[in-house]
Length: 196
Image 1 (cartoon, helix red, strand yellow):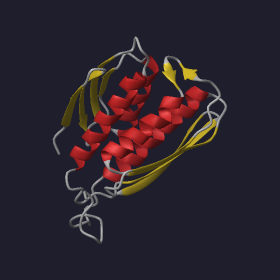
Image 2 (cartoon, rainbow, N blue to C red; image 1 turned 60 degrees about the horizontal axis):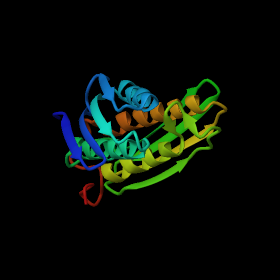
Image 3 (cartoon, one colour; image 1 turned 60 degrees about the vertical axis):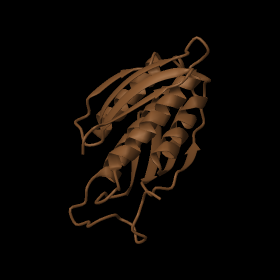
Image 4 (cartoon, rainbow, N blue to C red; image 1 turned 90 degrees about the vertical axis):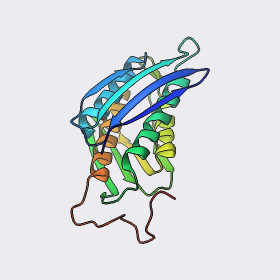
């Protein structure tokens, strides 16, 4: 499938995002939020997604609008990249450790947006990203991507490690879920659709 480009412009942000779900892990990310760039680069690399993001937001206010709107664009690009979701594996999960931390992510590309996010943070910020926005980002991507997402930090002491484990687990679970099953004919659903 061809890469999908989403361009979102509001009074708060201007975001251009291009995603290839079946890429090679190339990333070019510029959001103005260094730690967020790091997490999105990890996501692309470990999911083998090609991801380009040029995001300009009202960072003089705070990082909320930029993180949220990147989440909207990424979710929409995932949704567009899946088409009618024919032939995909659909459900997948991943556990990823990062030193003392362990994260779990399960995905169902069901067409029904829902998110359960569980993490205990030890600090209010990691670099220039508020830790409260990490869960909000995952919720936003799931809602606009039209899929069911359960993400949980099992344990950990370092917030950087916990976040990194989450983004890597998300990448690996999504990569597995979007993979094509050569045995599958049509949409992996007994109701015949995953987009309604």
